[in-house]
Length: 265
Image (cartoon, rainbow, N blue to C red):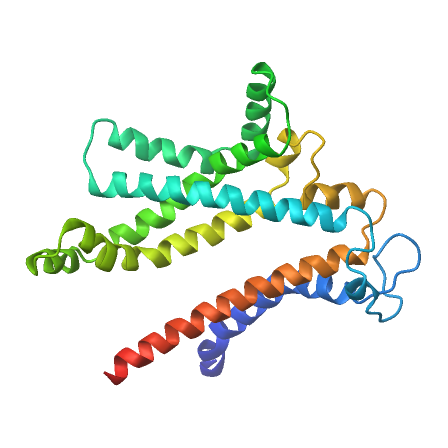
């Protein structure tokens, strides 16, 4: 019983990680499959065809690039606006501040189908053509709340004495922000941007309502599922996962080196 009590938390953690990564492992494995027929659901034989001809199926790469473009543009605008809102909510006192804090959480708490259908009704009433612009507007509205929450948490966790020390050393407000505040907030901004990009790239419901004839990668997968998902989709999904994993590992390595350098000093 003593051994069980000592290792039960670790065993549960391993089981949870297996549960989380098992679907990803299946996606990666089936990217090397050479299916018989149009459905890539049962293993047939090992093949690199999906990786060597990753754009061999019409629409796969074009939809993937479309999602990348929309995600990057939406994340850029949402990160800028969300960071400014977070600074305003944390550093300033103004009328309606508490109400603004409450409204910021509304898009996060609202089901995506409600937001998507509401935006569709708005665009149709304004006779605004559906396409990439409407999808980007919808994604920016959806991402801003997550950016504000992430950057706001970083700002609230900052030690105000660091900025006070900079001002005591006769640093101007601009210099204090450039050399003290912004570097401290930057990890939170980068984390918020990465979260926003993943939400935008992964979104299906809001995009489906407001895309019109535009085909993003999630919409392409939804349409291909009715005819048979090609292994190229698994290859691109595996590529996205590996890229995200490398970014996380790179951030961890940089953080570890910084902590090591500080400990040596």
